[in-house]
Image (cartoon, rainbow, N blue to C red; front, side, top):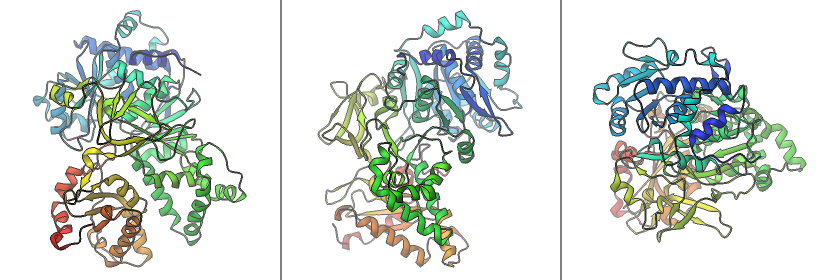
Length: 599
């Protein structure tokens, strides 16, 4: 059913609280029980928190920081800030105190809402370096010098369904051109910049981005991707807009259990989520001789029906139906058994991973966008799709291409600019007002968009050949033993690979072969391990042109994570960090390069 168009996020809030949904939000208590928040409870808690902000002198345009995991207080704080015209600044809880202080100073936040005592202590340690006037803490007991979140909303539910006309009038006074949020980019290639998005930017995207998915009140999703990232936030907004249910999972380790309990109908993840699921399925299958033969056989059978799966059809082949009974259904059951739509965004998902999932009966539709575009530029859907593409550009956007193939985009969801950085803003728009995405792309004859790679990440060999690292890295990650890979070789004769193993799978593999090891460092230097990874590299090289094939590789003794600094919160490689951290290893890979054969 077509929903009324919204022009601000406050219009979206009005839809959420007027739909009389007794279970609009689900959240977990300390015992792990799932509890509901109704539309009325959301309204009253948002209103109470907004009144507290107003009482502290917060007015239209003032900034409020939100440093919090995925929990019901996140959207309540978000909607409360937006309701009074304030600008919220979501900040990743994983950042250090010094990094957070830098963002607070840059944005000029007067208030911060934080989730835990640990976050409060971190923030309080740099408080005198920031413009903060108050810190609100969700967790109890509330430390001295902080404000208890629960006190601010303590009596809110008692108001039931009664509406506050003055609050509603204030909410309705906020317009599409008013600033809604500052989202700081993760800084994979430089210092973070605050992306300034208006109410109209985000609302224009929400009205159109999910067309073709038929999301409605019977649908549910689990909000587990960091809400400081625009992809996760956009999903929640879309679900709210369509009257669906959002269940908040504050820890990634709880996701598997949450899927069994909530049984979502829609799952949106970043590529690493799907890659890890595939690797875990393959790892588990390797535990017994029967399963180790059954999974590849089932994938082989399913590979003949990929297009049918993407078209939403259940193949009638007896072999497919048998494989579905023995294998595919178990994979779907791991997601709760009720999912009808899978979407991947935030970074490119390799075509091999897409085809593997389709071969086990799971169609993953890929979307593409940027923080600066609020975020969706294009998305595949069950209604209109092409495997390997990111779908057709949204109907309210105009796209064109620079001479080097960079995608340029223009439309109502494109941001107004970087916060207090006019020079940086000017550099990313052309004379006609098109935003330069930084991505190399092309449209096929039917208008489907294909992303090749990040322009700034392209490697140029000393022979002048351009190498796109992400497709090669994705091919390496098709192996269950590879967690991450980084291709290096800019301005060198050839390219090489740093490989971070999936140590859970690698240790299983080693034990099955009676390889003794006392540490990860010892394991990655074992000759059998090196030989096996060499075979993985050779298989990938067989699919590559000579100039992009990997001449050398090195297995590192660390599994790269967000916590250890090699990955962004959306699981993208921080290439600059890796280049610095493994500078000596990279030097060794290119040792003797002058005498090596160039391709």
